[in-house]
Structure formats: C-alpha cells, structure tokens
View (cartoon, one colour):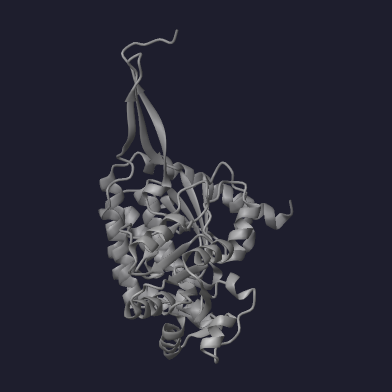
Length: 420
C-alpha cells in the first residue's frame, strides 16, 4: 500500500465509522423524524436555490463535453423545484420499515414474523447529474440507511451546495449530520477506498456510464447493486396507431437524450415501414436527430446513414437513433435479447395479444405498452425519486426506491417453548 492509497483508506475508515454510527441511530428512528428531515431539506433546497444555481454555474463554466452530458449536469429553476418536490414526495410515501412482510405460526406454537429493516450504510458513486445526490439521500433516509455520496468531479460545486441543504434538513429533524456524507475528495483513489470498504459500506450503487459500472463490479469488495446501460428499444408493431407511434417515439428519443430511459433503437415492423418510416424520420430530423439504419430501412429512406454492427450495441445518450426493420414480434424480441441491456423496452400496438406476448417474453427490468420509454423513472413510478435502475438477476429490478433498499429480519414470539 503506497502513501496515497493509505491516506484514502484512512479517510474512508473515519467516514465509514461515522456512517455506521449514524446508521444505527437512523434505523431506530420513527418515520416522522425521517420525513421531517426530508421536508426540511426540501425547504432548504428552495431557500438555497440561488446559491446552488451559482455553484452549478461554476461547474458548467469548467465543463467541456457533449451537449447531452452538459444537459445532465445543468441545473435550472425548474430542475431545482423538481428536486425539492421529489424529496417531499419521498417523505409522503408509506414507511418502508413499518412492514411485516410475512407471518406464520409453527405447529409448536411459535409465531414467526419477517420484518423489513434497513440495509445499513450505502455507498453511491455517480456521474454528472447533481440531482442524483439529492435523490439518493432522500431514498436512503426514507429507508433508514446512512449514505456516502461520491459525485463526479464535474459536479463538485453543485454536489457540495446540495449536500449543505440536505444537512440542514437532518439538523432540523434532530438527526446526525453523518447520515448523509459526501466524499472529501474527487480523486479516483477515494473511489477505490470505497470499493474496498468492507465492514463500513454494506452496498455500493454505481450510477453512470458503462466504464464506471464495470469498474465497480470488477473491483468492489462489497455487494454491488448494478445499474446497466440504457440500450432501450421501441418496437412499433404492424397494428400500431401511426399518430400515437410518432408522438411516443419523438418523446422516447428526444425529450431528453442523455438519460438512461431514452430509446436508442427503433424496431419497425416491415409491414408498415414503407409508409411510416419516412414520417418517423422526418419528425425526428426536425428535432435534430441523426440516424444509423440497416439496409432495409435505407432502401425506404435512402438518405439515412448506414449502421455498423457496433451501432446497435451503443448507448448513444445523444440525438442519434438506430433503426432496424423487423418481421414481427419474434424478430423484435430476438434483436432485443441480443443487443439490449435489459433496462427498458416498449411495444407500440393496438393488438392486445401482440402486446401481452411482448410484455411476457421481453426480459427487461421495465417493459411498456403504448408509452414512452422515458417513463422509466422512479418519480413516474410514484417513488418520488430513484437511486438507479437495477437490472441484475439476483436483486430487485427496475427503479430502486425506498422499499428496494431494505432487507429483513425475523422476530419469533413464543410461550415458553424449548427445542426437543
């Protein structure tokens, strides 16, 4: 261990010990205290909006990247209000800890209950979007978990200003400041210390690009709640309503191109492609979208750029749409299985049997019928916010809200039984 690594390890140990102590207190709180912390934090966010926007302006001044990345980084009054409102919506949710998940009586008279409880201490590593810190803090607090936040260096000033508002809410509710901490350094060495913090962090949650998630999965010595790429598809079936399809696809691709719920590939049924594809591409081109199309699509709209084999495996997070013509539901599902990330996929059709077949057989964490893939968001699910979209096969899948960040314990009530 070199001197620099040792410094980060020692810092992580100090922070982790504080988080562990705070988590023990938080786990015993009543819902009222946790909810008060969230509503007071929301008020603090609104009150500090000018200062937070100024801090975000500093981040934006030093930013140099794609327009989609810049959109994720940027805060404005509407996004500030949405952030504050998200905390209030999380506060209004039912208490995820006041739940008896199951209860049964054994033949010997013992009554066994399975009770929801917090995971403990969460570590959140995220990129670019400053609001993720507020969302993650809200969901952690609601579910009784302490959290350590490590945002990207590009959002350093924004993250610090938002954290100050969260801390204000904790103090107003009489909860320890250490329930929500931010990393003391943007150096990647501290990320390595977080990934190795067994005994201090109970669950690591990466939220960002493919390289971040892969690094966390590769190097972590604590459990990881994976957040996959948003290689999302919208499949327009032969029985789709054309006007609905045009409206939904434009929203699914272009509402915000840099979020994980954006559609990256259009799968269009061959039976309607000659009529509908020119309309769809004209709609999207007018919004500034570019295209990567297969040969069948280019035979219909000759101006489309040819897709490479790699394009259909690319999460653009930008105004670029892949297009493939398919022969029915089965080919659409086959393409999604081969190229998708099991994040979010949609079918547009008026044929209920085709829709139900698609929904039953697509393996995505979220699947939709006649709706935009951009609805894959914890706020739209009624969670108030989310901590990411989980896609692994051994844990909860889809938007992760307060309930998904609890585990359980057992309580056994007896009347004097002894084991024979």
